[in-house]
Structures are given as C-alpha cells and as structure tokens.
Amino acid sequence: MKLALFLILGGISLSWPAFYNGYPILFGDTDEYLNIPIEMLEVGWLSPAWARPPFYGILLLPIHWKMSLWPIVFFQGLVVSYFLHLAVRVATGVVDFRFLVAIIFILGLFTSLPWHVATLNPDVFAPLVILGMYLIAAGQGKLTSLEQFLVVAVTTVSSAVHYSHLALGVVLFGLTALFAFAGGIPRPMRFRALILALIPIVVTVSALSFLNYKVRGTAAVASHGSVFVLNKYRKIIKNYLEENCAEQQYTLCNHIDKFEPRSGTLLWDQGSLVAEVGAHRVNDEAKKIIRDSFQENAIDYGLIALKSTFLQLARFKTIDPAASWGGTEYHGESASEEHLALQHFPHEQTHFLTSRQRNAQLPRSEIGWIHEAAIIVCLPFFVFFFYNALKRRAKPLSWLYAYVLVGLLANAAICASLSGVVPRYQSRVVWLTVFITLIAAFMWRKTHSQRESSESFAEPQPPRS
Image (cartoon, rainbow, N blue to C red; front, side, top):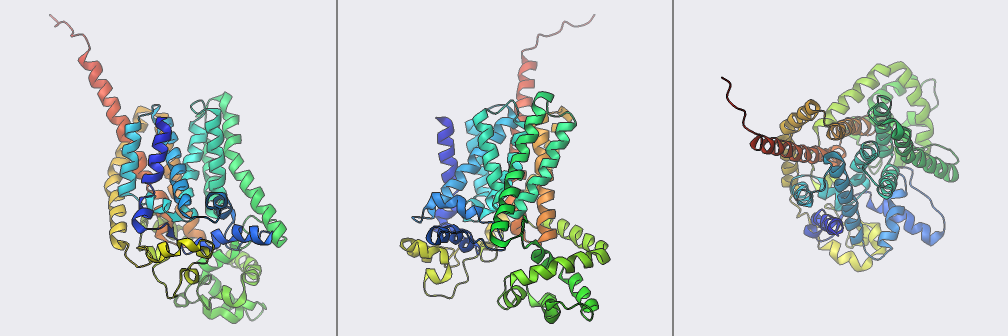
C-alpha cells in the first residue's frame, strides 16, 4: 500500500512542470514520435522515420489512445519513481518511504529530472537504462522474480526508444560482464545476471534490424547512422570531398558548400543537405565517404570525438525550452499547424495555445541555472561519499557509483561523438549524481548513528592500575 501511494505521489510530483506549463511540454520531435504509430492504425502499416526508432510512439499509443497526452506524463513519472524505489532499496538494503519522498522532493525541485518527465520525448528513458543495468547486476538475490521481470522489461523498452540508449546499454552490459567475471556477482547468480542484462540488447537489436529489413531492405540497426556521422565530422568530410571530387562522382560533390560551419546542420534546417538531396541518397554515399576518409584521418576523427566528449560532460544545463524542447517559436495561427500531433487531440489545442511554453513564459534561464548550481554544489559531496563507500567496501553503493559514472561518461561520448554537443543530452542523465549523493548521505548518516549508538551502550572499561 505504501509503495502504491509513493508511486502515485512520485508520478504526480515529477510531473509538476507540465502542470505549471498548463500542458505536457512538446519537443520538436514529438510529432514524429507520436504520429508514426497513430498513422499505422489508420493506414494499416508501419513506416518509421529514417532518423529515429518508432518504439517510443508505439509504447505511448495504448497510454494516450488518441484521447489525451496527459497520461503520458504521469506514466513516465510513475516508471521513474518505481526505478528510484528499487535502486534505493538495492543500494541501501532498506525501504524508508520518508527518505524516498525526500528524494522525490529534492530531485523534483533542483534537478532536470521532472522537466524530462514532463516532456514528450524519449530522453527520460536514458537514465533508466543505467539504473536498469545496475538493478540487474546488483539486484540478484534482492529483487523478486516479478521485480526482475519488470526491470528487464523497462530496460528493454528504454534501450529501444533511441539509438543512443542502445549504445549506452551495450557499454553497461560490458560493465556487468566485468563485475561478473571478476567475482563481484556470486557464482550461482552470475550466468543469470549476464542473460538478463543481455536481453534488452538482443531484443532491441533484433527488433530494429527486422524493422529496417522489412521497411528498407537492409538488416541494419541504425539504417541512416552515416548521415549523423557525416554531419558531426563535416570539416573532415569537406576536406576529403575537395581532394577527391575530381576522381569520385559523388552527388555530395555538388553540395560542398553545405559543409561550411556557417551553413547550419546538414540534417534538419530548411534547405539543408538532407532536404535537398534526400536522406537515403545522402546515407548511401556517406557510408563510403566516411569509411575512406576515416582511413586517412583516423587521428583527426579521434581527437574531435575526444574533445566533444569532454565538452559534453561539462555542458548539462537544462537550457532555454525553445532550443531544447521546441515550442516557443511559432508563427502559425492554429496548434495543428505548429504541432501535427495535436491534430489527433483537437480538444486539447486550446490548452496548448494557452500554455506557458507556447507563449514563451517558462522561466528559461532560471531553470538552467538552478539545475547547474545543484550539480556543482553536489559534486564535492559526490566525491567524498564515493571515497567513503570504497573505503567501507559498501558493494551495492559502490556498484551504483560505478554504473552512474560509466553511464555519464558513455552517454557523453556516444552523443557528442556521433551527433553533437548538446546540453540536453547530458541533462537527461546528470541528475543521477544528485540521486546517488542523497543515497550515500543517507547511508553515511545511518552508519554513524549506529556507531554512536553502539558506543553509548558499550560497557565502560575499568581503569588500568
């Protein structure tokens, strides 16, 4: 009963930015995510976008069922709250609902978490990949069979909703394998943990490969991944094209000017390379261009990726919603012109049109500064408690630190080196540092209280003569 009340409280509390906004926060890609499965119901077949998997929209279809977008926000808050509960229980070995409520309160007020919960975007599932892999490894013998099933199910869905989440899961599976073979997981549970950690990766890879084969005739996980790499390393690609276009008959040779930094992204802008040439044609040529240019400039590729990773680690501010979530710069008269998804929810158009996001009334800079300040203040305590956990050999907590640290680094490397340095990418996971610091502080206080209690009840020793 207490757990149910906590989950309801967490689902509502972590959704507060949507209430404040007056409507769930719509991201620039919300239309594409939601429209694909809705159109699938109408036309009878699935035609996913080239740039992203369709599974986030498919997951949400039975939740909104073309009635309202509000249940999505509550659902996301509920799932996050459940994972927070399990992570606290596995790391501390106890269930203290007062502490859990305090965690929800602090994370809700001072971190980016509720803003991702309130946004119709799969970013909220990235940290669940990290927590899910941790729970699979450290939860052996601590979670019931039903809880393990739910953890694997949610981790699988979280891995499938975005390509970067799958890559993050692969890295964390490697960490799980390292702990297993190093003896961190007891031998009877070692094989089970590895199988459970592998399920999200195998299911996601299989689903994406099958979908791309049926729709595009290629059994690739990310059918258009080369387009993103082309955009990221455009300077190297531009130099390569200038040196080789005299011999190679690439269509992209006629668009070298698009690779200039001032020309904007190759992907989304009106008049971009993808818009003019087409994503399929660009991707076909990009595969060979990237392969050949990498052979000649592997060190340059590596240096750019390394620099981008460090920049991404330092950029995690929840920035202006106009840039990170979309929705404040509109010119159309009706909501249906601005967000196609709202065509399926006509009775909610008024709510969107009067929302703070739509009318540029969200506290843009304040949001970012509060979240950034919370992380900066938290960092010294994060380091101190990590050292303390290692010193005390507190394995569950030390493992949570390991998964969070590897997850933060992997998330930065994956997103920055394959896409770009965008504060939103790190903002979606950096709140985990505050979360783990709160857990570590709780355990540190509990340990010291027990020590003081044992000392006060200890029998006094007779004085030595």
